[in-house]
Amino acid sequence: MTMTDPIADLLTRIRNAHTAKHDRLDSPASQLKLEICKILESQGFIVGFETQGDEPRDKEIRIFLRYTPEGEPAIQHLQRVSKPGRRVYRGAGDLKPVLNGLGVGIVSTSRGLMTDKDARDQRVGGEVICEVW
Image (spheres, rainbow, N blue to C red):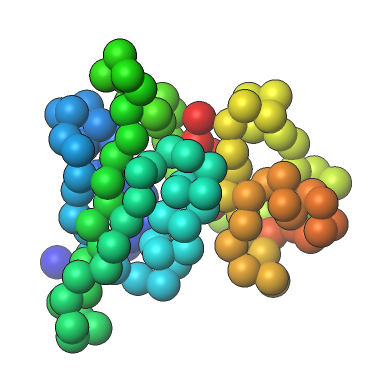
């Protein structure tokens, strides 16, 4: 079975692991998924991540999830915006802050993957991958 949207699969795995109160999860690796994990880590939504496996086909990402001291997941909402069937592009002026700046939008730009704030600061638009808060 081929996966039509590996990014949606990654986001769903993260949501499901949070719901089940797991402290970590594994997902097939790709360069785009690694970049998404770097942003989630830099924004404090996950504790960290590491790659496992030697062969390119066997590579996996192990993601360590973050919870508050009360046991609440750090990620309250994780939504795919641009999908294979409906791509969503925004210019730099059209990138609005997610949840009035409390959330983060992940945008694929010509300069690589970055947060919506970084894209606005650098005045570049792109494809809105997902929103997190």
